[in-house]
Amino acid sequence: MYGYAGRILHVDLTTGKTHVEPLNEEYAKKYIGGIGLGMRLWLDNSKPGVEPFSPDNPLVLATGPISGSVWPTGGNGHAFVSKSPQSYGVGEAKSHGSFGTELKRAGYDAVIVTGKAEKLVYVWIDDDSVQILDASHLTGKTPADTEDTIREELGDYYIRVAAIGPAGEKLARIACIINDKTRAAGRTGLGAVMGSKNLKAIAARGTRDIMAAKPDEFMEYVKEFHERMKGPATQKYRALGTPENILVHNSLSCMPTRNYNNSRFESAEKVSGENLNERFVAKIIGCSSCAMRCEHMCVVGEGPYKGTMTRMEYETLWAMGPYCGVDRLDAIIKGMDLCNCYGIDAISAGVIAGFAMDCYEKGILTQEDLSGLDARFGNAEAMVKLIEMMGKREGIGDILADGVKVAGEKIGKGAEKLGQHIKGVEVTGYDLRCLKTAALGFAVSFRGADHNRHGAYAFDVKGKVNRLVAEKGRGKLVKDMEDVYNLIDSFIVCKFSRGTYYKELEDMTKLYTLVTGIEMTPEELKKAGERINNVARLFNIREGLTRKDDTLPYKVMHQPITDEGPSKGAYVSQEELDLLLDDYYASRGWTREGIPTIEKLKELGMDDLIPIVEAKL
Image (tube, rainbow, N blue to C red; front, top):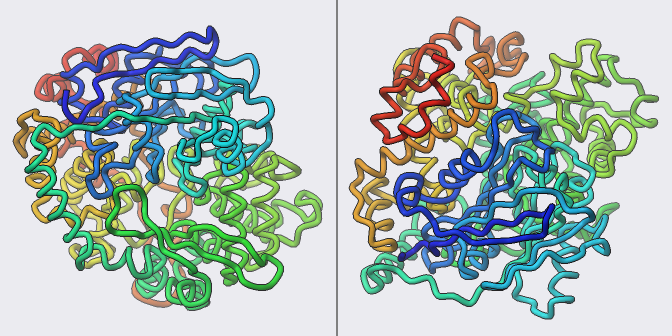
């Protein structure tokens, strides 16, 4: 095979045995790679109703057909897939950097990890050699220290490592998996799944060449896209990066602030991308094979957090800043650094801190409950301390580390209504009360609250639709964007590069054919994107999720925006949500309950998965 390595590695941590099977070529064309292949392999290797922390819950690590090549942003990605301990449905998270490159060059399209080791271990993949090694000495280490230690003991600096931190070892449901020290497969709690298997890290070194089917034409296409990625389509990411969104969203009054008590932040200028770039950004670097460079490395030069260094994106900046009412960039950078050290999803961590602050201000949590913290909105030190407590699972952090859904249920007294999540996964930086296309995209997202599953916010923020109105037609907009995003995350290419695919499906189809040699039309590729969304829906249906889970956070539906401005009074009613869901399900060819029909599955060539829906129809 070209592009694909053609092999899937199985690792059973209970028995210590490993074996390799050939990649099913039909799967390659149908599910592409990345999350598409990962979700299909998870379904094939798991039983219905498996508990997320059971040894029988597979953790699938997948690369894409472009991984390991020199394709701009496409040579470096990888995806983890499992059953999420937050949503109890699809858990998937992507990351870039260099780890995916190395794994693919070691000769694997996917690694399926099952079982549970007796003690903490790490898996060492060195081309055809696969070893399960003792990791007892790595207990409690940060992902960065784990990476350094493994490289030192294996004797090669260029080994790439994906690891969990202390939070993953302690099964915090917001734990993530970090590679290249600051790159995270962040959402849906897959670091906790890894921890439940006593798996501290996966280390990889590969020496194989990744061959394109049409190497000369492929290299010409690479050159063309290198130039595209230096152009206007990626200007935002090369300049200020995603933190540019702070002032944009604030001006539209669509940036959730103080745990959804407001939709804009009066101190937005202090935490803007412009201010961050001027005062803290020390260097901008890129992933393997990337011509864009978007990783804005920030360094705190003075004050109590002097010397702290990490990368910063809009979502994490928003979560620890405006969402908590915090206007100090040094503290936000420190909070981000702690998330990397403990191995927790930084978006969730900030949202949870904002939730705790809301509980404190409403008298649901007391200063005593919070170990003496004066956790009012705007208290930067309290925000940092709350994240530290989550990472260590100490005090109130022991409850908060499992996310706002679980924490709200345990705390009670109305705290459930203050926890803003979808399917158990914390919200991201878009006020869904006044972005109604985005609200639909978030509600139906198969991995819970997430802007990166659909990109539907773009229709609202850019004024392509009336963002304050719910109407028919939004379902197809969301569906079509979802299907393209499914392909992006299955190839795997970086979403920041999506604007460089000027003809979108035509460009992606050409890339796929040049690399793999598998002839594909844009229509077939579009159908693959739709198929991937359907396999995700089948995953969730099999695990018990229904239409009732395609909903929105309590405040989005019950607490209208009070801020003066263009969004005042906006919220999403149940009637509006039902209209949007009906429209979306119809556009997908599903039933009114959101179940794929037998006819739709046959149309997509998914006949073998029909038994999942037969009992539900």
